Image (cartoon, rainbow, N blue to C red; front, side, top):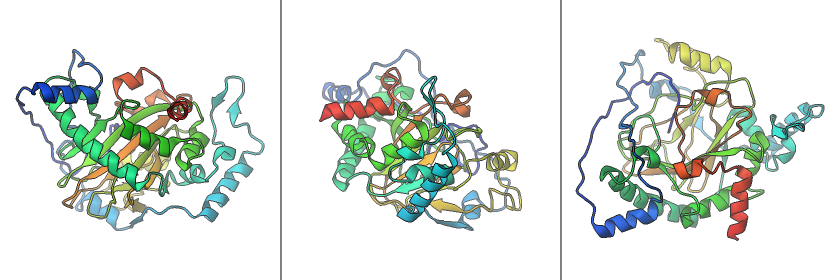
Length: 373
């Protein structure tokens, strides 16, 4: 699980390593140039590790503490979604959801939330949505990502491209990667985007209801955790702010994820000031009696093609991959810049430079999907 926050990192082992790779063959270089479409920048940042070895202040590990009150992330029933949506509809009857003067989306718009998952995100900070991606598309995407990771790693280590233009930042980097993706340059990526973000798709309508149609594409990437990747510290992706959720992120499973594969752990209803302050003040107190330490949390043991859609303010973490299998998540984020305060404390963004320059929105991505046919 990625994080751009500045919270204390607990129970992680620092990895700092460098490798010297042989010069790539002409054939290999040609393969890489087809996948990686932009030129190496002149500056390079050492992003080998963001995971520091800090002595834990608690007698139990964070994972042990969270496990005391833990379940599995389930998709909300249709009845619950409809009831939650109705609650927000009633609350908004006498309120304008759009600033008509500037045409800026600033509130949750229940009328757009066709499938009711936006209201669940509003309430719980996280929602599971099943079958957003077909099994066939997930299989093709997983194969593509595995090959892209090999080629991109060789290109970076060979000095052909800057690390930060092709990889994002992630907590506890050992056996874990945040692999940035192209958009139109990959049929596999476009297949995923088409299935998940097409108009009237459950993920798309949920994002639109919370962030608006002009929410900016903020991230497009893949999270990969191999066997041996360690548990991340509990964290939000951005600091708390008193607004409607300004950023939503969607993780789509490219294979079945069981308890041993390091599923993401979410703490529902934690996207508020009290939880963030408790985490900031003492993370987990020495006797594990704090608000965060005793809160109910859920593991996202998703089936292939299922997703978790969550607010960037929701507390979460990637757990340890104790299996012998790779876990891959196709993911993207959208943000409402009208709501985001000082970038929310986020350090960087997992989006290729050429996509950042285009300022794509949910609306424009859906136009690209339509033009694709």
